[in-house]
Length: 148
Length: 148
Length: 87
Length: 87
Image (cartoon, rainbow over all chains, first blue to last red):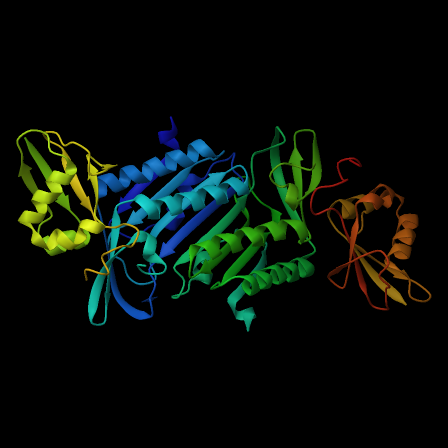
């Protein structure tokens, strides 16, 4: 059962990165890659005051599981843990994290990159940026550079 | 001064992964990638009983710094922290860790991968594997699959 | 037949509702449901270019046929999109 | 002139020393120092194929000239190598 090798979580409180690493720990795996996406104080040159994340929770969790399953099917991996935080996320804190363990580092890197890229493409989660003089809802994929 | 954006450490006690993440935290960086290499209970089909790491410490630290500098010069990054543990490392514990922060995840992944790959190629650190009936000194690059 | 509709993010804020129920004769397409929703909530109009749809938590296209008890979700762009133009 | 030599890992274990001092007339090459070391420690012989060298913490080749006070390090393979054959 692949299901026992993955954990996908939607959280309403801080992401515990130590717990993410512990969840993918595996005696047969010599490599672990953890990706952490955190809220930035600036986006498109404007000062961000507050950030909120909202999700279609039931579907988001299902999509996160689907992506992790797909990674487990494609590469020789140990375990995958993926978590996204919702609600108000203070600046500088983690909003999303992906942890992947594997016997070899190449697969751990490739799979972690795949999971976060897919997550930002298809998982129904949105971010509201509040800045001086306004607010905007943007998609996850534009998280690094703002909407195109 | 690039020097303030990197930390390279040789440790004789456990690597604190939370501290590694904290060291590269940067308000302008939305992405952090942490790689953790840990000791495995098997290598080349034999049960590993104990693992020791030894280094040419002064040169190893210098090489680690050189590699991190090279990454900072090649990509748009925030900070880099790299640590290697020496001496007896219990099975399943981290022997090496690389943390990289960047404004965008692509650079964070690429640079973390570069640092660990280069580290395993050139940094003078060796591993002694003790197994049932013998022991062998192997290089870091063979850490996942044993010597060729 | 009835279909539950869910609104998220910018669409939830603009319409002021997070869910509603639509009643139809027969088995309408997602496109037909979207036409009806635009009549009920004219603020949705500008989003026609960028909204996507999920039925029972799977992405579908506008030709997908709805059935009694389905949950239709209006998905504003996940990957950046037209929300900027309609700000 | 004198050169400090350092031994690590398998080379340290085989020779039983972690460092020694060599004395030369003139300015020998790394290769000449390695020849002398093999005379003093015959167990080093089988490592000729795979040992590399660092002088003052920089990798060098065997033609590199040593100077008074240099630190010569014998670097057994970092990337796997001939240690298996000489096990």
